[in-house]
Image (cartoon, rainbow, N blue to C red; front, side, top):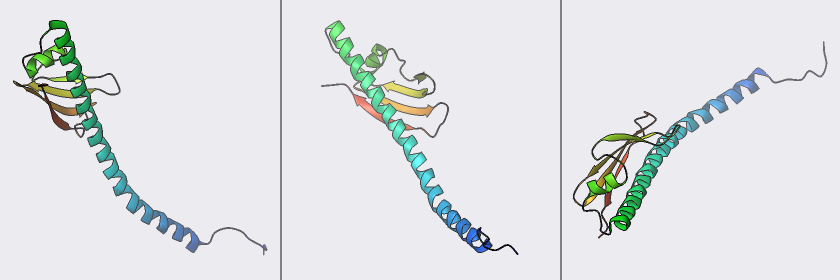
Length: 130
């Protein structure tokens, strides 16, 4: 017989596997929740980016024409976008599908998807400055 054998017993290996299984059962749902929250936050960030784009378009239109744009639709047009139509904005790998709808004094921003992944959704409104 060989003396001083080294290695793990079957019970030790099974114990480690059970501990890893318990950790995985706790960590996987948390990871899935974090991924969903990250998608929601990214979509909210895209809404904020569109509001910033509308602010810039409003300011440029105001400065170049000497008067403020009359409606939300005019601001969308000044931004080089189309009101009421879903458009793709950005470059790969971040292509956002966004719909801007202009009304009398506001614009509704709707983020539909990112790279055709419909779990990236959010909405917001941008109001004409007073």
